[in-house]
Image 1 (spheres, helix red, strand yellow):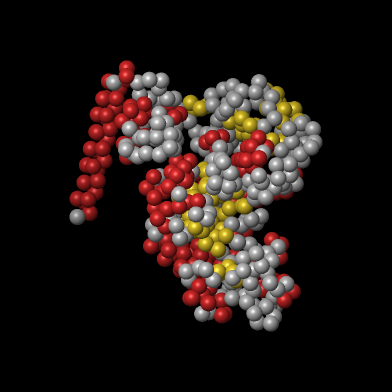
Image 2 (cartoon, one colour):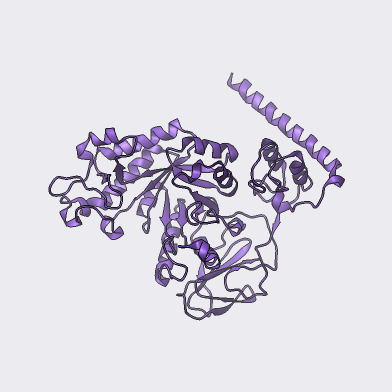
Length: 475
């Protein structure tokens, strides 16, 4: 039976490829009826650097799908309908390699953004993460946008149907189910079970449960109790039940409650003895237990400014990296030394083979679109200094639909290519750092806002960077 199934699958694959090749010949024979042909970049549906049978198979799987114009890359002619003519456009570039440029030419001097003047062929890029909370992921329009623009999605675990819909639209996207790593809430579906285990809760010296101020009804749990084993099994069961999810995203995963400044209805001095002093070791064991139970599926804790839990989970997200979502457009965000420390901490985890992810942002972005994009490019450049394996590096801008970008800029699709060596300080400067990739040079001025611009030479050309800006230079 197994051999027959395997043979049938091989035959089916062969038939698909044969059908596609026939379609190619038909399409090529009808090329004279085509209008202005889209570029190879637009026709590289799977972003692998070459127009191949895989792109045509992908196109054929989407024939008949509809949405807003350009809603998905398969909508090559951007008329909102995936049709045979879209397939014809792609077929017209069959066998070609992709050539990309990085943006607008600035004559060698830039105050941030992308510099072109050259071309680059093929290459990998940093992966894109969408963080879609509340009900945003339930919108079919948002689902299409996420499926066509992102490689990973973090969304509430109870939106199982939405996750399944997105997976149909993009079978390659990785979807993480949101859970809390430290807290249990009265509104959660498992509250009756949790509430029946008093020993699972952290208590004050007076014996009361520790309740949060900003989220009433949410209680701090004991990661060294049976709650940890229960949670790990809960995640495992969930992922088995809902295979559209590829892992779990665990919020509030901190090793120091005081340092992160959580606010509870009792002061830290009233916590039971040993809770704060043992918290880090408890959390390390807790995260290790979850990863061991879940196995090969992704476990991504929100580690904020720490990476010790990333090492246990083999993945981690750094929220508010360099410039947070609550930071104003004229706010420095991290200090100069802190930027380098963050890059180095993430780079250490990347060298271990772990997944690294970041989520920077900008307050009131739609009111300051130019400045917000500048922050996106700057934080993107800083993150690029940390990556090792581009397939294990995820960049998320803002929260999905927090502003009009939806968390996406086209620059996030730059094919940097693999990194070539570590980042370094540019000669003759104090605050400009750069890194070479296969297809680009990336440079960033990490000095504070309000200080003077810096002119420097990179790869034989002169560039000028304002404070807290970056440049991406194609080779």
